[in-house]
Length: 104
Image (cartoon, rainbow, N blue to C red; front, top):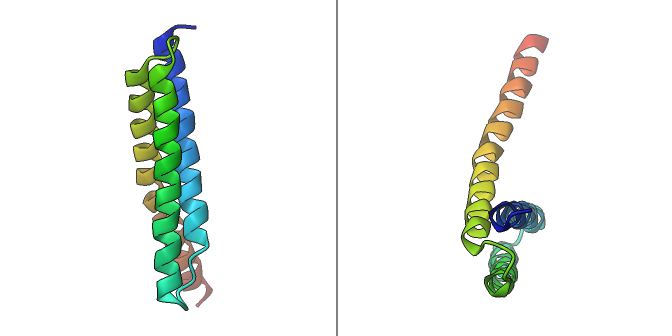
């Protein structure tokens, strides 16, 4: 397997893990206490940033993985998943609104 393909695959895996961690930290937020919600969001961001920084540091020292491809895979996969999330939310809310109007 070429270093470029391996780097791209590793970057995509890191991007998917980052996105799923972001969603799991966001699910912990409850609107009742704003200070705790802010602490969870900032703490989750710092945990994710530290983990990604450590993984990228390890990849930069690896000889059989293309670091540039890993970064491109990370940014690309996280961007695609982030852009698909509102489309999925709007799609389900549109269907729920249509079902509610059909019931009347």
